[in-house]
Image: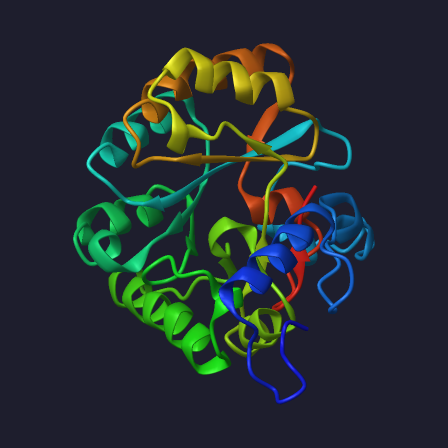
Length: 258
């Protein structure tokens, strides 16, 4: 747990090093990741009620989850058009300030069209640098804003930069939020080259994968049709994160990563 003997969170430099090791291994501190396969294995395949989260059996089908962080943004409506045309569900980890509060109609559309609406904090602060009350504020403000628009509270969250620890896990558990990381990233924050984004995703895609993209960067949404078409050609079925885990169910506070 990233605290000093006096109980205070450590400084940014120490937290950065510690968090980096968590992103790579997430070992110790009670935040060992659970794979989608392990989540499915916790529930008997014959439990029809538990399997209601998704019609796709990802134990038998080559599934992959497409996820988008830090939106919605100006390009999200076009992205939704693409997903609708191609009949692909996605999971959106939404940012509160200047996104959820700026594009409420888009948030409602995401929910209404059957995508999973999830939490990516209010202001994208690094949660491992914060005290528990600050972590709670970052997450609960976004929970409240999304519920006001959609009528539903998210059950999933993604910590900014994937940085988590015991405190983040404890607060997430308290708020009913499971933590979802990823296995594929195009680093689309660093390039506007849509073809490069597409290549990076396709090179790393694998069964039970979780793809991380951002619908707020100029090169990302134009790359999505090609990503979808090629992965479908390779035999992948697109699912939301809850469908990827079904018949298992995301447990509040737990960390999920392929």
